[in-house]
Amino acid sequence: MKPSEQHWHNRAAWDRLAKKQDRLAKPARDVDFARPLQSVDGPGWLGGNITGKRVLCLAAGGGRQGPIYAAAGAIVTVVDISPAMLELDRAVAGERNLSLKTIEASMDDLSSLQDNSFEIVIQPVSTCYVPDVLPVYQEVARVLCAGGLYISQHKQPTSLQTTIDADSGGYRIEYPYYRTDPLPPSAKPNLIREDGTLEYLHRWENLLGTMCRVGLVIEDITEPMHAKPDGVASSFAHRCQFVAPYIRVKARRTGKARSNVIIV
Image (cartoon, rainbow, N blue to C red; front, side):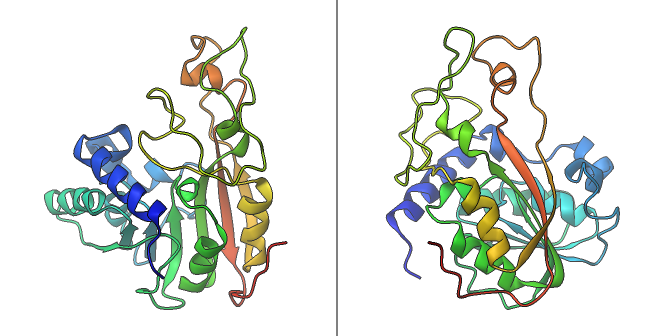
């Protein structure tokens, strides 16, 4: 698949963010390695032990996810669109004597990976950077073995619709729910949008329904808590009292992955 303009734009944006050590491009800390699995699996969805498991960290470069899962005993492959983000993974792995494999690729084209080659796919917030989640989920289902887990986190559509700054004590819906074009660039740095990236609003039908249609069965959902009652107006903690920013999904591939899905 030929990379799109959006692919190159976001690749360059994440290279820039990695080189300036953005908050999402900061390597894991010593405390994360003290109890590595617990630091990334708060709900306990991975059962407490992933030693020897084949884990794909998808769109997950930046020196955190891959090294932590490797420290927990997994056989880790990290895929990311950004060479600079992958370099952070290699640097952290080298410093801590950890073994992991890195591949530069887009989350919606994993053609370099074989079918049924992973028992776990971990995807932190990243589906917002592609215009269509269907190819992503199809690739995830393809590379997962039967019974394999897909644990992903996504930006909630309402959060991407809503203003960053408070207005009369609350927040206003700014963008249509059925928008298909990328969102306009954020006017100022914030914890909701990533500086310089192209982001897309995906409806619940896309985020959850499409996951089911490709052969993944949703087993659990959580909404990570970031709200604080004493948050200052327009702060991330204050906004999260009104709009939940993320959803985390546990899904399992229970049978054959479906490649002929049509979304009407």
